[in-house]
Length: 463
Image (cartoon, rainbow, N blue to C red):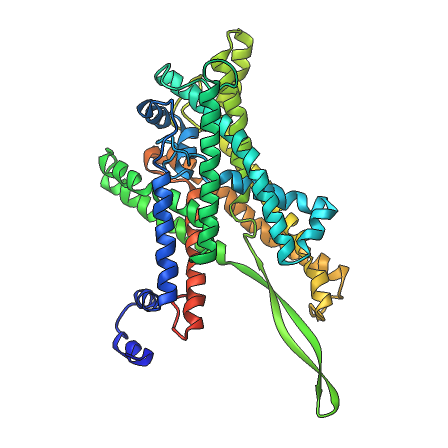
């Protein structure tokens, strides 16, 4: 059957459904899609391989009572609840990626590697892999300490005491090596997906972990005492949030650009001009500011929680309890106990998210050297002189549109806590960070699939 005949017979099919059918009919695209699905199955299998020395039932009970552990469990795709070797997910690798992006402009050797093309980028990726290993040990040990503190409150002795001395030293080291191996294995799977599948592999691994928690959320909805009207309202609100995320992820400010070029024709030189634009994304920082702000705000509260549990001195416990109360993400054991986060927590999250949005956007902007590259290519912004005036103009535009992206991210960061406070449905809320990741990965994967279809003369599904 020819392509034209296939299209003629499928005029009544929905556009997206027909695009999926067209994709599955192409052997190479079908192979990429099946390979991606197979790697996700391997990821979910690894997420159920436990580390030794822990009672899973006590861990599950501790996670149900701690919002921090619930936050970690969401982004590990339930691997933390299983005490899996993949409980760290790929987040140490993401942390290493963020660090490399921030330090590359500060060191001339790294900046030179970035400009060397493919070989330089491969070398930076290798450095990023090396940096991931010690970060796995650091983040893994910190997570074990926090988990041990929470488990001891539920069931003392159900988990080994993370320590490099004493009888639990061997179990601690074995657990850290297992967690590091699990993270590096997931990173390898992600790179295989990038090379042989569809989409960005590391992002798809994170996407798979978050989506894996959706059935549990649906089960909580049906088992809860929440009325039908409130559940419907939450569903409508979730759809509105997803629509807003899609709009902001795709929103761009187009700066017009003209290119002057010389064309040699019939023995004469002619000057021609072309028009294009520079697309500046409103939310160019993505989810990175959310990760930074949550990490910074959560850390003091749980250091204070650790001090509160381990100290017998009254004034130290009082100071720790103050930080727990003021910066609690919820479910603390001091006076800050309860389901809702404190106002101080989400106020700081909002402010830090806005601040990091500007910081990360400006770091990326400085690395791109848009004005310099534009001048080298013979392009210019109409009415703006090339060079420094162009850079200042683009910066002014970037600042204005970043305000919209930063305020949007700040609102997304605190939205689950506002919903919990207003409607008292904490068990039904899903992290806005998780929604941002899911929507972003879906959009990126759809665009790559769209490009694959258009290369084969099929009609795509993104208008």
